[in-house]
Image 1: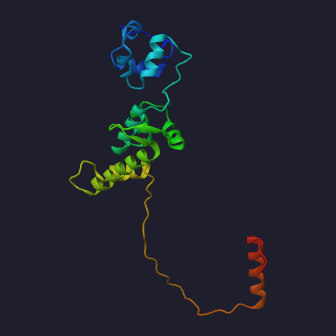
Image 2: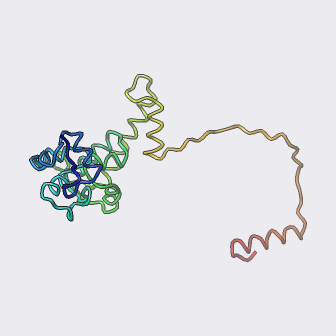
Image 3: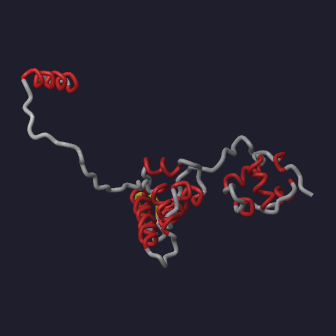
Amino acid sequence: MTEDLTEIDGVGDAIAEQLREAGFDTVADVEDATVDELADVHMLGEASAKAILNGDDVGHRGRPSEFTDQRARAAIEAAREGKSKAGCERDAGVADGTIGNWLDADPTFTDANGDEKQFFRAFRRARGDGESLYIVQGRDPDGDVEAPFAKYMLSTSYEYKKTEKQEVEHSGKIDGERTLGDDELAAIRRGLSVSEGSDL
């Protein structure tokens, strides 16, 4: 028998649905779970799981945005795989817009090799790797990524724009040189001086 999981502090309709899909049918199921078990549920992270188990509705306000080495590494790895910024945020378990804030602040973190790195450079390089993945595999008919999907990801995640070059032929008549009179030149000068704020 399922119970209304929204009775639990910090659990709304969307999270209740995800909990039910993960096999938590009753309030007791949720209360008996560990932080790790709840954190594995889609849309929940560790901070949210702790808040739910502690009954802390006031302190529970979505995903965290605090910068940690682990979150930075997760975001960078997701970027290297070609995920969008939103996908990188989901993999890092942080709130929407957090990576943009991190890029602005440019904090340092310790990578998997123990080296200290600047987040901005590391994330941009990883995004470049992900971009290359779509470019190379999108052109390869035997690649893992199909061309239409690669084009879609490049346009939505990497701001590629479709442009077409077209040849244009003029079929009208073009007269030769034309000499402007003094009145026409004066009118042009007046128009330029007004629009540019200069004196000709």
